Image (cartoon, rainbow, N blue to C red; front, side, top):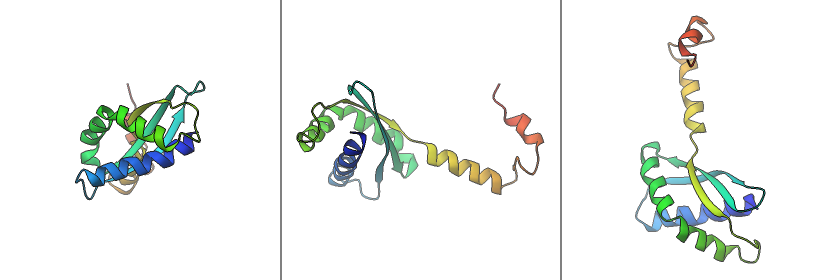
Length: 122
């Protein structure tokens, strides 16, 4: 069910962004998690460029009922019940990029173990 939702959500969201005049913005659905009772689907979105993410996610959340209706129309022969959609920004790529930059930069915790004490969460 998650893969069906993921495929159709990519088409709907990217199409809506293009039709809305947002050129140069890439929206990808990185993960969809559906609850066991099929009532809620948590949708994790990666948005490029990153600085547009907060603005776009608010627009997507406000249009969630319309998106749900469009997905329900596309999947009416595949899904018996359409779950409520909850949208979140997937920042795992940013996190990986920050780790990569840290390892290449001056503050490399592998080269200087003393930095680990500084980075520990209190």
